[in-house]
Amino acid sequence: MADVENNKMSKITSFCKRRGFIFPSSEIYGGFAAVYDFGPLGVELANNIKYQWWKSMVYLRDDIVGLDSAIFMHPKTWEASGHISGFADPLVECKKCHTRLRADHLLEDIGVLADEKMSEAEIAKIFDKNKQKIKCPQCGKSDFTKLKKFNLLVKSNLGNFTEDWQKAPVYLRGETCQGIYLNYLNVLNSMRVKIPFGIAQIGKAFRNEITARQFIYRTREFEQMEMQYFCSPQTEMAEYEKLRQYRWQWYLNLGIKEENLKWHKHENLVFYAKEAYDIEYNFPFGFKELEGVHARGDYDLTQHSKFSGTTLDYTNSETKEKYIPHIIESSGGVGRTFLALLCDAYSEEKDRVVLKLKPSLAPYKAAVFPLLANKPELVAKAREVFEMLKTEFASYWDDRGNIGKRYYSQDEIATPFCLTIDFDTLQDNTVTLRDRDTMKQERVKIGEIRDILKSKGV
Image (cartoon, rainbow, N blue to C red):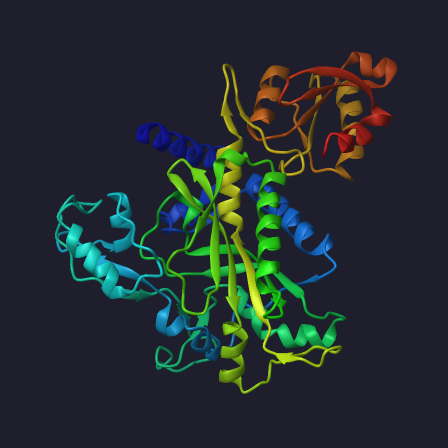
C-alpha cells in the first residue's frame, strides 16, 4: 500500500511540473529547499481557490469583513503572541551525516505520535525511548544529538542598518492572524460592525522549517486563509460549532470526496484554548491537517492589550456589559487545499489522464479549437468564438496537432469544456461542445455558448 501511495504522490509531483502547475523555486540554481513557485496553471487554480474562500467567508456573510495586513509587524507582536518564546519545533541532528531533522517526524515515521502541544521534555523522553528504532533518512544511522527546540520565526533586518540587527530583529510573520488581532480595534471603530463579527484575510506567512517534506504540504513560504471571529464569552462555543460545520461544508462544495475527510480532535490543548479540531484530508502519505478550527478564548486580545497598553475591551451597547472578546478561528492553507484538490481530482483512465476539478476551479473554463489549422476560414471563425468567450471566462486557444490529442491535453489540465469549430460551423453557426468527464459531444449555437457554460457551473 505504501508503494502505491508513494507512486501516486510521485506522479502528482511530476505532473505539476510537466503541466505548469508547480515549479521548484530557483531551479536553475539547483533549487531552494521547501520553496515552490506556482506556474501558469497553478496560479489560476490557486486564485480560484482563494476566490471561493473569499466568496464563502466575506461576500456571502454579512457578519465578516476582509483585511490585508502587512507582512512586517512591530516586534512586540511576537512577544505578546508567545512566538518568540514558544514557537519552535523539536530538533535533533544526525551525528554521522549532520542532517538536521524534526524529532516528531522521525517518530511519526515509525508509528509513534508526538503531539505538537507536548513539551520539549515530553517529546525528548519519547524520542529517547524509541531512538534505537529510528534511522536517519539520509545515511540510515541511529545516532542523534539530544533534542532541542528550534524557533521557526524568520528574522529580518528591516530598518536596522547596523551589524547588531540580530540582537533586535524584526520578523517575517509566522502566521497571518496576528495582523487581524492588531487591527481588531481599527475595524470595530471604522466599520458598522458589532459583536459577533469576523475578520477574514488571505496572505503569506513564513516558517523556518527544519526539514522539507511532502511536496507543497509543508513549505517555508506559504499562503494562509484565515478568519478570526470575535464573540462574547457566553456565545463562543455555540459559534464554534456553527463555524465547524460551515468549514466542513466548504470543502465538500469544492468537490472533495467526503470519505477523504475526517475530524481530528486535539487532546493536548494549549492552556488558553477551549477546544480545537482539525479537518484532515487523506493525502497519499496519510490523513494530515487541512485546516484548524479552534476556540481560543480571550487570550489573544488580552495579550496584545497587556503588551501594547491599549484597551481592547468591547462594550455591548444594549446591556452595557464590558468584556474582552473571545475568538474562534478558521485557519487553512492555499497550498494544502491545492494539493488535496489535485489528489482528489487526479485520475488515470484507459487512454488518458484527467483532472476532474469542478468547472469553477479549473484553470481554464473552455478551450477553443479550429478543426484544421491550415484552413484560414476555420481559424478566423474559431478566433471569433475565442475572443467572445475570453471576455467572460478564462479560455484557452489551441490549433496544434490532431483534435484527439488536443482533447486529451485539455482533460489533463482540468478544462471542463472544449469547443471545436468545423466546416458545419460556417454554415449553421453551431460548434461541437465536448464534456471533459463524459467525453460526450453535442452541437450548440454560438450565441448560446455563454449561457450553456454558466448553467454547467463554470
